[in-house]
Length: 418
Image 1 (cartoon, rainbow, N blue to C red):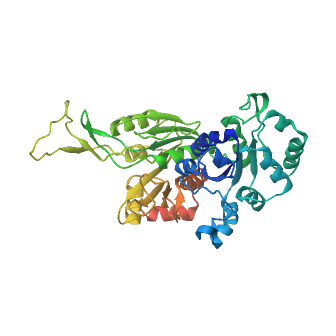
Image 2: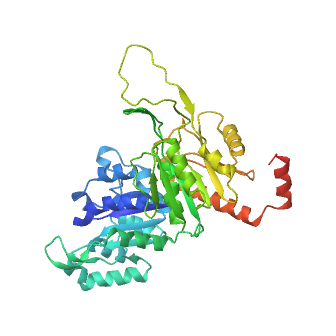
Image 3: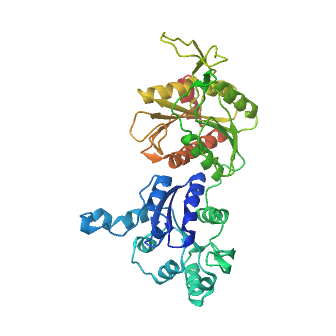
């Protein structure tokens, strides 16, 4: 889901940067819109770096530099149509007044009028401004129109006064977002194990074999599954990612450590998602001490690691298994082959050489290959959005498995060799 975060000109504007991170941990895609006042407290570059999205600061580009164009003139409509929620934090008394009176004199206020998405505002201001009759009347009017207000906290304010007006805590804002978006709870009661990230296979104490996986896709699946009501256990190789809120993370290093961690939790889970890029080979005899440099050629004997997905799926029973196929050629053919050979229920395949897809990108382009013969090609989406589509397919397959296939479906499965 996509959230547009409006940041307005108050001292609490700096807290919006951390709020972006929390929203991302929840699995949301965030785009920031800043008012002119907000840019006095924090720079657009900060939010651009955190979100990987364009930060919008003006309704029209600077025509004096020849930047004005039709696209910029109607951008508020495009953003309004794409967003699932408009969140304004911090929201100043000024922005509350403009929202209440329908004023549209900058990008954020124009977006507010143009969007049909739900709106959540988290006010932050001086206690006297908060308690002023005009502000309270604006709050009451916004509530009447369906705007969700996150009540400010009481305490020591930047102006030196004590009282109501502090920006609500992140957890309160996140709670309001969850309640407004009303995420589906179609995985409630499920226990989902997700593997993510790379593994590292030691050559010696200072060197190892690994791959380019960042773990972003697996972490996105874990966050999305938690939001949909599941208990989630994330078995993660080495990454720099923050653990998604409400997810239990188990840190591992090698393929064997990941395998053991999966085995220990195999009986607990009802759904297993193998998103990790596990090393296929490891050094047969790692050196106990650092290998010294020489001018001679070096050969390292490798031995295959155990296929964690295939081993798990051989005895999966009623558990639903999702695998990933990162390919560079013949993507569909290789994915279908892996789906059958590994006894998975769903295979998520992508060409890692494609633009803006694969390792360490925030977007991905995948095709979902299901055991019941359904192939679903997705357009380029954020990894959070891809995670949701994967789980949609998991829910569909789970329903099929529990209800049992139709007689015609059974016949087609027998014909295919299953």
